[in-house]
Image (cartoon, rainbow, N blue to C red; front, side, top):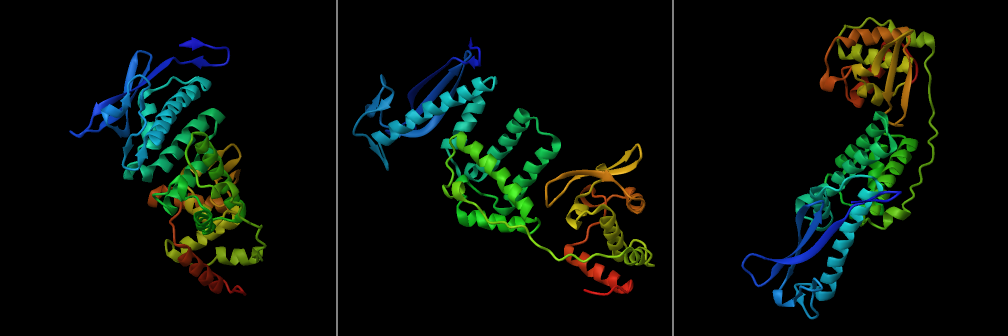
Length: 347
């Protein structure tokens, strides 16, 4: 190991050799990498007849052909493998990180030896690596890590076996539409930009990405929504309705009143956990990352919101949520019922 003013230089060695393979005339080409007194053998998946192997140059001789591969394509692959190893060590040097030979082999296998299982997991494996590395490099807080982890889960839900080469215009449009089911356009733009930063990073690691991704530029104008407001009198009428405690209608009323006093969407109400409500010096505050905008927010709770929080805080609901959760359809149906009971006009 040598020390440079800008980075550490890790000395390494590489050589190719042949290994007998399954009692056939073809042998497997093995790449051996040595570093810091240790070594690791990487099986390239390339098969060659020994008589066509040049030990001196560690390349395939002219005229060899195996299935669809020729001496030209095989030697090009061997050169790219050496380049891949060198780039791995250079990246470690630049980031002052010690190379790990097993990590090198894993990355090689993910990039070059795609089994059916690896094809399905490569995208998500690399996304998780991206989150780990970038959160350390850029000092991301928990909120930013959550943003990327939520995006990862949205992609996994959209297409569990997605690959980098799948990211054509049609797939990206379909993913945009899936985001639109729970997000506004501004949040969709943010999520697509986060995805773009990951893909750009993956390309820097020499992963092949569909060319459509570079030019994909969805049109997402800001929506103009007609909003109807309740008066304080109308809100009080809903709040003071005599409803059986613990019923679905009672739970809907509480969630709605909590929304009105916090300006949270129902999608955010559904994500609330007891840890999102904190006891501050001057009362209770709420702190969370919003679902549709991916914004970190914090603000004090009004008295009625505090009363509703206390009503539910001692209970346990699915997945540790703060409130019992109804489907959007049921929630909207119960809201209409509450409106009729409170003699509100309109839809």
